[in-house]
Amino acid sequence: MRMWFSRLLLLMGLLVVAGVGLFAMLWLAERPGPLDERVLVVVERGATTEDIAAGLEDEGVIPSRHLMLAVIAWQRFMGERRPLKAGEYAFQPGMSLLEVLEVLRQGKGVVHRLTIPEGLSTAQVLERVREHPALAGELTLHPGEGTLLPDTYLFTRGETRDEIVRRMMEAQKRLLEALWPKRAKGLPFRTPREAVVLASIVEKETAIAQERPRVAAVFINRLKKNMRLQADPTVIYGVAKGARLGRRLTKADLKKDTPWNTYTRRGLPPTPIANPGRESIEAVLNPAHTDDLYFVADGKGGHVFAATLKEHNRNVARFRKLRRQREQAKGEGKKASRERVDGDGRGKAR
Image (cartoon, rainbow, N blue to C red):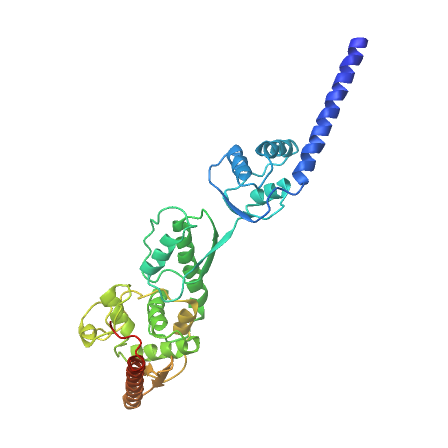
């Protein structure tokens, strides 16, 4: 009888100790943590629970790796089955251990951005993908020119470079599937791919959104009349193959025959010359209703349009005159600047 009673007391004592220990553990897990400033922690793929706990302790996010492991063990006993997810996490000052574990289980990592401007060649887009430090893995995909949709792509650390390029390709595919059925009637191209080719030319010709439908109309009107498109960006692409030309286009460039030179060849080029954005694709699928066949820069960042060659030649003459005046004023400004420097004795060679 006494032995049974002693065992009962021992069991009760152990239960009290265990209860006190559990209470203390949960109390510590709910208390504000030791962090006094925001910190970023990367949880690598394949890391064990022990590795994660050790890393969080080293970064000062949690008070003890042993406490974290004990809390996880208790939570599993109570039915918690969500794993701790890999990723890059921002932990705020004073976060409790329970809050830290919830962040890791939900996978609420730091969101990174990769912005792809309209009009970049595929080579230029892929270079940006390679250079982003938060993306993982080597880039093994080789998408064709004009197959990527420019946009701002959000991702968390650890997403692979191939994955984000696939997202760009899928985004353009979905956009074309949505816009193609809504296209205007009588367009001089037959496939979504040809629409992207023309949209890439429109993209490179103007950065002004309001002008794109009218620029698209010029090229569509020319295609319908079997006129050469005579688009300078196509010549540049044929010469530089998607890289920056880095100089002014020359008359020799215009005469150099390449598959993309729309001065020497009729119709659309064989491929896009860049990755067009949504607005340029929409513009070629639903262009403005005009008789325009020509356009030239207006010297103010936009363009002036014309339906006849005579009117276009007048517009070109005005633009060239304006450019000469600006270059002359610029040259006189530099000369006056040099005279001021020489006049007061500063900037002279010694």
